[in-house]
Image (cartoon, rainbow, N blue to C red; front, top):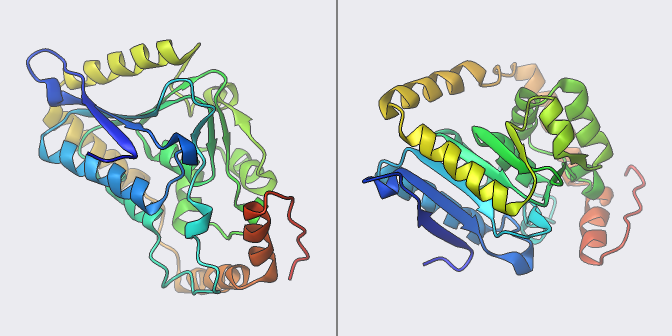
Length: 267
């Protein structure tokens, strides 16, 4: 049993494993997406796949102020490593989540920061407490977000909204995301979130699983980002490499760990 997630089977009927709920339980780290957390979540996705689950819910424990603080800052490379040779555990997990043969529901309460926003956007449906908020924060740290992640956010949000999220690193409300059609359902509190998420998951589980698997596969193939040209790739690689090796990046991570505001110089 993992010490960072909890798994429950929620039916319906004579197929209790049709709906699986995975709860992030590492509250003391604000459910940061550490290597351990990502491994545990990935193992549960694999287990649900092996057991022919028909829907999966990802949530935090009721009453949390932070759903997930995003990718663990202390796991980021600080030695100027080439970002193309750094194995990104978050991106690896999100690829597994995208390929899951069943719909995945994000049940969101509290703040969703950084890479956790991409996790939520990777899920097929989002049900959120009205007071939930979302912020994509790499600009606070000097982190050049990976190209695949930017492409995925662009596929899920209007372009100007994605730009505001990335450029300001300020939070947006679940109400705003619902207005843009990103959040499927808004609920009042944690109790209603649990009820609504389970009801939607059980409704999915009662539909034809092979048809849903085929349709989800088609949707994934049809919405994948276009391939970059070699010139695009080279230019973006140089921009990201410069950011990874910059003094600003070192300052951003140091300021975060020291719990102070960073001072960026553009160098």
